[in-house]
Image (cartoon, rainbow, N blue to C red; front, side):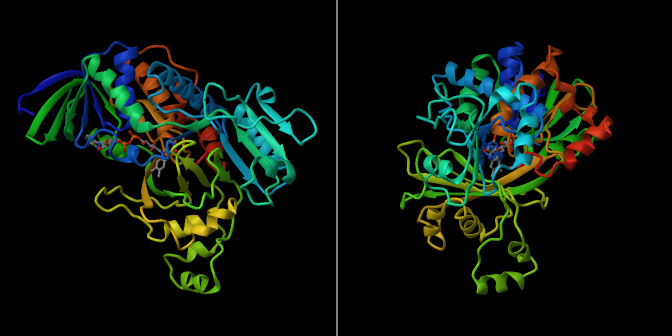
Length: 458
Ligand SMILES: Cc1cc2nc3c(=O)[nH]c(=O)nc-3n(C[C@H](O)[C@H](O)[C@H](O)COP(=O)(O)OP(=O)(O)OC[C@H]3O[C@@H](n4cnc5c(N)ncnc54)[C@H](O)[C@@H]3O)c2cc1C
């Protein structure tokens, strides 16, 4: 990088899946060829490298459902356009509970699907129309909507690995997984082919208004980049980049973890959908373990009732042998220091014990995690209501695309399209304003969103 001043139409700060998706939409949908993606590290190397890479159109609010439906439509288009470089699959999300006929869950489901929910949700009790399990992982062959399985016998017939006390399963059909890394690489190829550039540099400061003077630090020293417009897509550093403009954003970072390991015992059927235990639980510690944890102020919470949401899925397709487990129970914000992620050493033990409640065969791994198991994590960058921030910042010419919490891989496509439409002042979907800071002008909406217990956090 020379120290000379260079210029560009749009500078995107951050080359995670979100910044790349914004640049891709600018290049391919809005015809912006003079653009630069800035990142001090390898593209897709920070939060985007930690993603579980799952997608779903299941949300407690119809706006988020519509947004992710748009995102999945674009994911499907990318899968088609790339010859499925994305490795998109669609076995669905299976939400399990021990409650029989949980009317509150049914009502929440209907609320989330909004208009037309009745046609999308099918109830099965073993008597009427047959439930169609996922015959393959092929996303094009999978059904849409939601199948609700009622009764332990019906659940067991279709989900034999689940505990016998599961009474109800909500099977979300427009859901599955993709390779976020492959999608990022594919979009980067198209950005470069359209004339866009990736520059290895950290933005240290931002001077002026449009055009902005970005103070860059790269491997070859300092330089200035002039940009007519800028996009803040700095992931967990969204707030830090906003501060360079003298702005404050209502975001915090909460560290969440996962484990992945080879399922040598064959505990999880390869055709099992991404499965979530909706019920809260007490982790089944032994008496000694419980006493030890209760005596440690930092660990005492693990002896208290824990929230639902623990999840598990086979990893690597039908022929693979790995499984992934996660549980986003942490609520404590922390600053994202890449050199010292706040890993909880006991997390594998915690998640395994709790996951055995839905899939009891996983108990075989408690205290005996196979060699080569991975324990990793990253920050959910989120607003208190768990809705994203996409669109103009307060500074004219500055835009933001972030706060995508635990859903940025699946929502990157629609985020990129929406942010690019704001930048080019092109037509936008009806929910566009709700993802800008304008939503905070509606305290009743914000209060209602924050009152929702789960907020779609998974
Ligand atoms: C454990 C875990 C599991 C998840 N599972 C899923 C899932 O199953 N499905 C799903 O959809 N989502 C999931 N997510 C969420 C998803 O990974 C994130 O929402 C998404 O990766 C965020 O992308 P990003 O581009 O905003 O951030 P990042 O990937 O963090 O990218 C931001 C980039 O900005 C760069 N940057 C920061 N500051 C500067 C600066 N000053 N100058 C230049 N560059 C800068 C950084 O180096 C970084 O590369 C999960 C997240 C975690 C942590």
